[in-house]
Image (cartoon, rainbow, N blue to C red; front, top):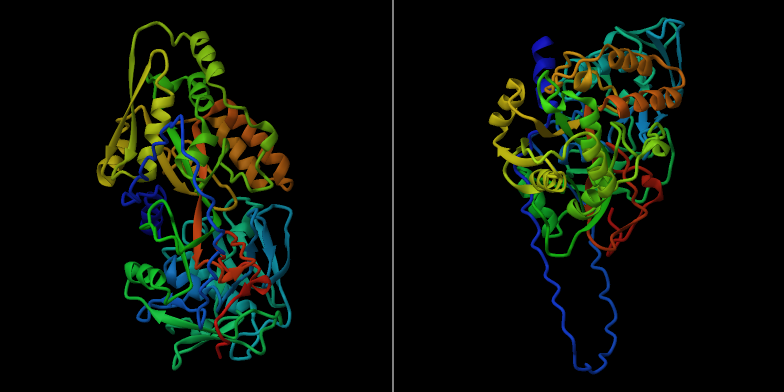
Length: 513
């Protein structure tokens, strides 16, 4: 377990060195005179091309077990078969689903979950506490979920049918970590375990069929969803580009672009944060928190997110998604290059003595590298001269571990409880900048244990705004691609492409059954 967690911690600082090519620049020339063009007749817009069926890609030879399968193609198909205890909404707020209610003991270490009655698996059997316990124990040992459940000391079923989770340290944000799909324990060894979701897998027809006995009883727009085999990610992209499948979830900053104009992108929020890390070791320039604050003040986040990242991210000044109710919007500081220059002069950074600084970024071009260059160019002010060093992932990670940098451009997938100890806590596994503060450690613990998380989040963010251990830049969005006009009403939530599926309208050429 310890080796697995160590590997997961290293993997959390995402490499992703393969990325989209940078978009070409468009030159807008000035012409003082243009001859009048004859008026053209209005051409009516082309009618959308509707498919005969709404098909999804999947990997036929890989498991659909939601605890063991990877993200992306397989996860999307599996999300219609299985349901979690809690579902995250578009603001990362955990909403109870298979869990109806929960309560904490006085210590804040024991959480008791009361399961919803009347929930059944696709074979008609009832959901039990033992099914949930088995699923969570498997998840705690899995590659995908072990990191988020590392604070879980024990999971057990009570005699009266509740699920009791005991933590090693208080964390009132636990429900946000429990959007883990539940499968029937006796079927966990199968390639397609039994779930409580709205669809059931039909192996013979290779499709998903809507359950007549689904416990939620909502009207969904599709009775049948065909599955088309894709041998790999590239094949899935090809199936989408040739209109053989109708939906695909992608990371637009690293997946190949679909440039034929035949994709409609629906933004999906994530907890993937991009940030600037500082080398805070003694003797380094950014050992001074005042200079870290000035650097953060000089990042034009809105321009970066809207123009440089083509709205593929949401600007953020704090290490919490700006969509979350915990994010303190009222505490944000407005960007001003003039004020940054004035503050740098006041801090003695206008002596004429050049300070050569290095900003590391995982190389290979793409959005991370262009974002790093954007920040370096904007902040090469007065005495500061910032050079971007693009390194392959292995060299990048080695340089971080050795402390051979002034700044680095990082990307990390946070958990939805916004637990930051590994990133900025003293001796945190991802704390490459050697930042150490007993006060920060105590603030992080207080936030985790607080019953009023909004108030605690404001206190924590106020402290981080002063200490500035890292400078958050933005939170990435993924894209759920569909073909133009086929789907209406889509609004993907974090980790749930089919959020609000009952409100979708899916246009087909003819009904499919």
